[in-house]
Image (cartoon, rainbow, N blue to C red; front, top):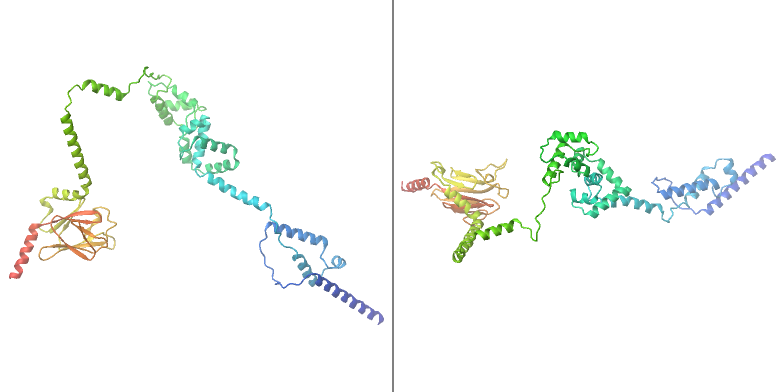
Length: 449
């Protein structure tokens, strides 16, 4: 019994010691209210580095406030695990000091944007054309004078671009990637524009100017000297360039005639003046010349006035001079003539406008010209019982009759040879006088009966 009571007292003392150690631990770490839920979020690079350092330091030193014998000998309890996790997570805060690696990363990401912005004028086709032309001529001045790029570049811009393609790794890499993405047909078209080298010109200049070479001749030249000619050359291209050399007297058997030596080189205009002065020996009539000058000036002024008024009178002239008896028959009451078509009015009421799939009208003005400003139902021409014609405007735009506007929901009388203008389309309204006279006579007989 004495031994049992001694063991119990030892256990109670050990429990009391554990409570004191836990109270000391709780006294050193301030308590704070927090949720037990663990929310996962993405960590930045600096947080990952600091958290890994904190974990490694905590593993090396061991948790603060816990007996080393207890940690090394046995597993800690659940309450101790919570305290250890709190003590480790509390001091870990993101460092306010900026990481020097972030600005470098930002600068690297901005650099390609500036490069692509600078490469805006230089297309991949221009780069390929520049490279091929320089390899052929080895002269940037000749490239500037002889190559036609997508836009006009100065000699300095061409030099800077060539040096950038050679020595700037970023620009050369981007240019190579863009050139690889070109279509094969575009590459073929670019290669056909490459300048001719001096070796190629020497071989072509040996072909005689008096001979008449064919495509087989140039094809044989390509087969004999494959190392001298550019790989994309064809017999047709060689023939065209040879004709150009012949035109400018650049072949070996051609010689350029020297200019006449002297103080003044006689040109064509000077020779023509000398010939006219030597042949014109008649006496000049100043009065006649003055009259001719005045008459010429007057005629030019009249022609200019007629040209300005042509759009006003062309419809009238065409309709009056083109008027013939077959325009009217026994069933046509009136005719609406334009410059392109003519509309026959064979009923007492017709509608004017623009025909669509859902709207069918009698007179489709779209056949005369651009009618997108005309309403679908622009107007109605109606014949009264007394023989008078009236036009009513039912559209949004006004109709002009002899220069006077007819607004919407209003009407106007139409006379013979009246000019009707609808949205810049002009028509002449011609009345069949014989048929209208019969209608008027019949209308006059009806009240008498």
